[in-house]
Length: 81
Image (tube, rainbow, N blue to C red; front, side, top):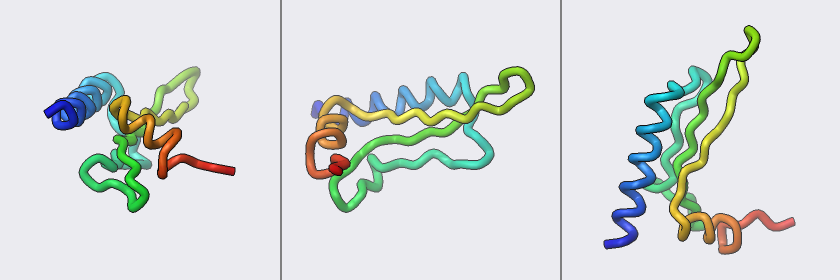
């Protein structure tokens, strides 16, 4: 199915990213695709870091399909003020 393919592509993207930037020691990847939040939020969160000028610069990558993004940004999982 399309949803299964999209999920597989998310994991493939995670593999490509983790091959270039190893996971930060401070954080483990969070898999909200296999373990969605109660509000339906799905995404992979991956934290790594770069060394620039002797300083560590952490960054987070969030990987999700277009449908997952729509739900995160506009659906039940959206952050509303």
